[in-house]
Image 1: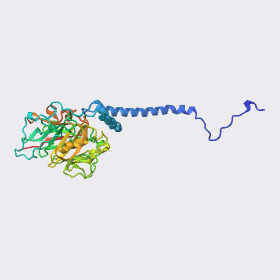
Image 2 (image 1 turned 30 degrees about the horizontal axis):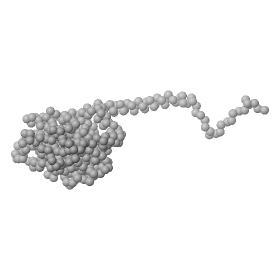
Image 3 (image 1 turned 135 degrees about the vertical axis):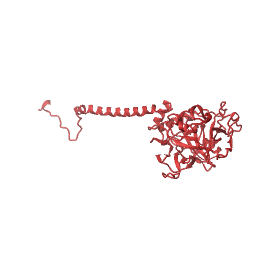
Image 4 (image 1 turned 30 degrees about the vertical axis):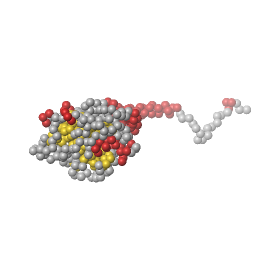
Length: 405
């Protein structure tokens, strides 16, 4: 009889499971952990450098805004869109009420006369804009001449008015610019469109300030614009056929068109800035402004959500009109531009951090400066020195044409 000790353990079947040697794990473990640590340190270092560079960028954005912009550019756009929609949906502007005192421009206090002749070639002075409300306040829709003159003639007129008959405590601003007296320049920002240096970049320098009349925001970040960016013979982002385009010609005049030239830019065009689709075409508001699909207007808040918005258009006689205000939908913005005479118009940037229009009245024809700059709408968030300092976004500068008469 075999004893217990005589019984040999059964041989494992071929192919059966064998536990791995603990020794192998002990040999590999330090190297594996070291590799993981290196990867983590690289990722952390990359994040720290990227995020830290964004927070310390030389521009006027707050730290919170810089953080939001960094997140939007690093895969967080969808999350921010949901958060923005939620916030704005539950923080819509109040209905009824009246604007605060001084929000509507007091045209009775104007000291600058309206000029209509002097022999300088210019467009006819624009007709006042019909208000949207039944009982307009004094000055609503009445044009006020502003900025330095060309041969004694004003090329810039501004007005303020309520944007709709429901939210009557809100105020929007409109600027009318004569391209016969004024020229336009597309400036690159520190981050948009990238690919610099460009011939014209923020900040505005003293030589440019000598003829500066106004400056206003451009469009969405390029990743959200669904369009391209071209200037001075270089393409920062490919132009897209069918998209709304702010076009600047070599003679300084500007236009708003639906682009159809592909990547072949005519020689008489110096700059093209695209942003989404036209909101006014052939003098009519386009049907897309009423679409419930937010993607119609980029990866941003829905087109019916009421926020700060801005836009630019062109009239039948070639004047450039800009409109902006709080509590606007895309349709309301289109209505403002249409009522100001735009036959074609496009949306520009949105949200209070990015919507701004400043005009300048330097004493004795001197240099435009933050001290003589004025917001088009009283409660625009950013101050007039924005474009005199580093700014992340591109923008449009408006300048008085030389006059030797």
